[in-house]
Length: 455
Image 1 (cartoon, one colour):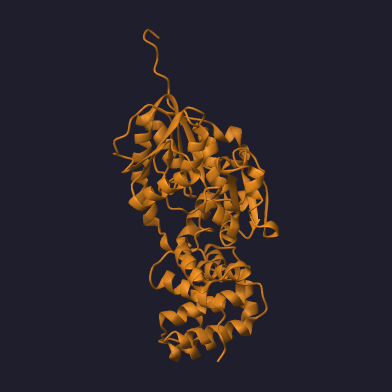
Image 2: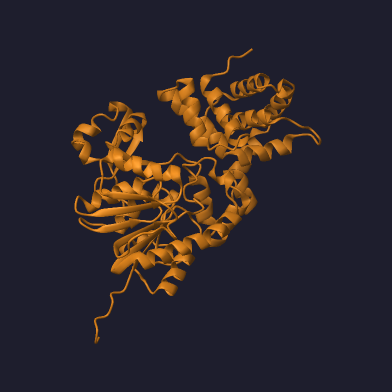
């Protein structure tokens, strides 16, 4: 019997925990790779297999349905072994097709579904025989069904983007969300000198360079990191750096909080943006961070403690109703959303979403915006952001808020025309394919000053 490689063992267990137990892929991977003791290139390859096979589930499952005989049944372990094997054959970029088959068959034998080993073998060998035809289909995204199959994106999502953004942008987006995500970092000067901290990032294993791009994608201090981020993750645990995306940094840049201001972060978990806001207001400013989920509120407090910022009050409560003082200089509503701009970094997210998720979130987003409008001082600003690409949650929501609240939208598109939202140029919409980051939407509003008596 062939020995199963450690990387494939990890990837298979992550697939099982994701699709059989409903666990989040990232969490399952961290636990499995730690248990296996994989580091460096072995860890990176295990992650490539696990995340990729989860992302490409739609394409793999479609092929399994096509190749299965009527009435033929198999267990969940065999299906997950097939997902791993088909990902290796068609998407790993290597030439070890038969090794992928042998490994998937052996995984199935040892998983308690030995009777399904023949089924797995037959499906994968047929896939190899018909690989030219299948690769031709994978290169065709000219229609909504073809795009869904080629890029392993749920049909409803392809259809929504096709209608809202057009075929060309949709095809480009669908391709981009299967690619590795760009990582950025910011050094925390409270924990040491910048050059000293950067020197501990791993030598030749990691490269950092200043972020480039139009405002607000390259704020001061933002660095793009490539290579192994294992050392960066350790430094982040110590509060010496913050790992984030350009999109996340752009939201705080648009918020524009300054020394001495009072800022409200109305949906603060897990605290990455909150930490950046706390740094910007300095010793004489203060931040109130609200988070309804207990575990995420703890994450916010822990992040601030790691960074060494003690000018922030963390409030565990619903931002729509929590007891909060008013007259904030700035309010950030980084609202709960469908996360469709973050699918590249969350491998299983596309399989957890459906149109009803968007419908359920609309009222929550609008109520949070209304509360923000009540709590900001006259002359102050409200920033509304999501990490999604969905017109109803983004431009439609922002326009409706401006109309009912009387707050005036800033023309962010005039400041960053290349990033203007296609539905309304006063707002910013980032795209993973064009901007190499999470697909954040950002709108900024100003509350009118109270007229002087007699004016």
